[in-house]
Length: 365
Ligand SMILES: *Cc1c(COP(=O)(O)O)cnc(C)c1O
Image 1 (cartoon, protein in one colour):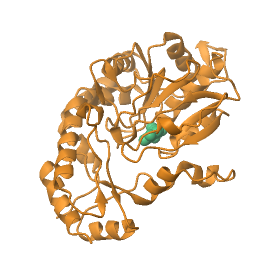
Image 2 (cartoon, helix red, strand yellow; image 1 turned 135 degrees about the horizontal axis):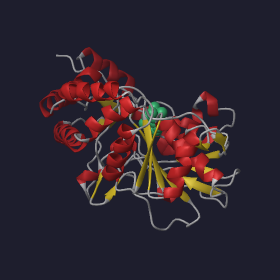
Image 3 (cartoon, protein in one colour; image 1 turned 120 degrees about the horizontal axis):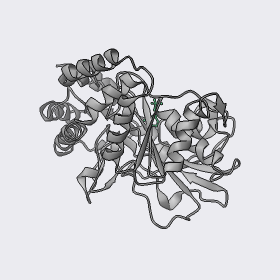
Image 4 (cartoon, protein in one colour; image 1 turned 45 degrees about the vertical axis):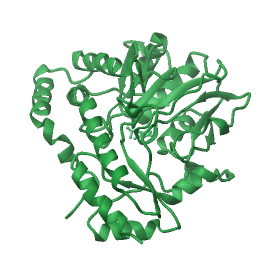
């Protein structure tokens, strides 16, 4: 048997007819930038995320950096502010900060939730914002005890639809950036991203900055960028958003099958959030392989037909682009970077194949 990590054609196969119809609708409309399709997408996304506003942009990195940039232009974030980012995330979380000329402060994470460890965040007088990442699809809850002056920007690239009852990711902070990169839990058929917020002034500023900084045609208030969401991608994502809860539920079933079946003293499985299973949409199913045996484990899995991946092999502060300033090691981030392995969990994986993969794992020595 072969167990591929993720096959994007398989991800989209259940929706091919709907996707084709939606693509044709855009082609026939003659509107290829902005317009009704993007507006409808923005309303639907805001509804999924429990926010008042959503703004479609070009990709997830742009969504994050445009929020920071907007807060700077609005005078809410000082140009010398520090932004706290978990060290165990995709590099884009940090790039959004440094691209704005802000200072990134890396924080350590929790070994059980993989998310920011709020007891260890490096808060200083210069902290302007914190970027909790809902990593692997698990909600990173935001404590009430933070200073009012600190802005919270959720990186919701991996957890759309996580949460319950008016408390979905995307609405837990002051704003959120999300990505619809094709492999994400809500994937477009190309690059796409969005910002959600219930602050209409912020939404308007993001929209302006994403459109060359112009509030009206040929009037450029800010030195903006071009980062618009294409209507054809908006149409693709609208199809996917309608099925997000069902897709998230399928991955939750797979996660439960893995958790129940994996029994190997060398392997630590993630746990479902005990308070509320809806707080995890399992964008990735990430185990830890201990005793320095990760490389052997991945080779062993590959020999048995199971494709695995590592999210992420290096804490962001050790990437060459940030390496010029040596960073003291953050112990949990370092440990995770050395131990984590992602198993197949998306479309193409079923509870049965998860159990078969678990049996292979249980034989690993
Ligand atoms: C994918 C991802 C991003 C960036 O999204 P793009 O659309 O690829 O720019 C940012 N943060 C996290 C955590 C991601 O997984």
